[in-house]
Length: 354
Ligand SMILES: NC(=O)c1ccc[n+]([C@@H]2O[C@H](COP(=O)([O-])OP(=O)(O)OC[C@H]3O[C@@H](n4cnc5c(N)ncnc54)[C@H](OP(=O)(O)O)[C@@H]3O)[C@@H](O)[C@H]2O)c1
Image (cartoon, rainbow, N blue to C red; front, side, top):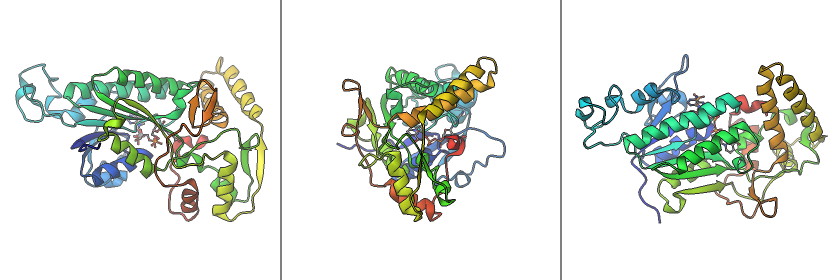
């Protein structure tokens, strides 16, 4: 049974791909959205300049800095933390005796832009923990976390950091919903330009080593927003993908050739090539520290070349498409056609390396 959504939500990661889609979804439902946006040189804080609906209230603050976070979200009590002194009882929003929380729920789409180990632990774990602690203190009731399905088989630092925060959240006093999403469309767009330039579609092995049910941005935003009002999604880990059937990299190639009208041409790349790159960078990283980060990025590439983004059946030791819940209507084929038509922009950013 659905219940009314919280009237006010603190949105983290609002300037990212899914955060932006979620801001639009929440505003369309009449929810008041506070977006915590970190300061960056030259950053315009007008919501429209950030690609957000004008109704979104942008709060500039750094979740890695406790003081900055508090001033952004609890300005009345920034000088004196709640329960910490006389000024705390001065005003409505920050009243320590009868506190009205500045937001009812947190919804996080925040994530490390690079996936590099140091940034991953800082953002996925530390920044989230800071916000969780403040949300508990301010009387919020629910925390919806966008996580990733790949944390079910953790091999990478960013996955360990995500899992560490999932544990913190589950142990907190708040109601929680942990949404472990499959691949996003933007992560599968890398080869469209290559194919349009007349080059073959590259695939590891025979192109069927992995499979996923990719999910569209707006569909995932709907799923996340529904977590606020659907009791069946409370205190649950929720793996979620888009509509099936599951697609292999060879299928991605086929859909790109269909969308571009280019004659299909595939080229196989051995996974062993990635093993060599990982091995060389890891060895060099022991003497040249900056290469350690590059080695981890190569490990990330290898992980996605060999692991499916479907629910893992630990007993049968295989990925299980049937056990991977599906949601939404947008398909990867539609997305590729929109990319070819110039209707969507490439949002991979630092992930373009993958
Ligand atoms: N890509 C996929 O296929 C996939 C699949 C499943 C799950 N996921 C997960 O889905 C989540 C969202 O992904 P996305 O692609 O929407 O992310 P994204 O586009 O990379 O956006 C990341 C957001 O986090 C913010 N952020 C990063 N570092 C920050 C910091 N130090 N302080 C404050 N904010 C910071 C960014 O703000 P700035 O604008 O200030 O940088 C941005 O708003 C991630 O947890 C990701 O792991 C991704």
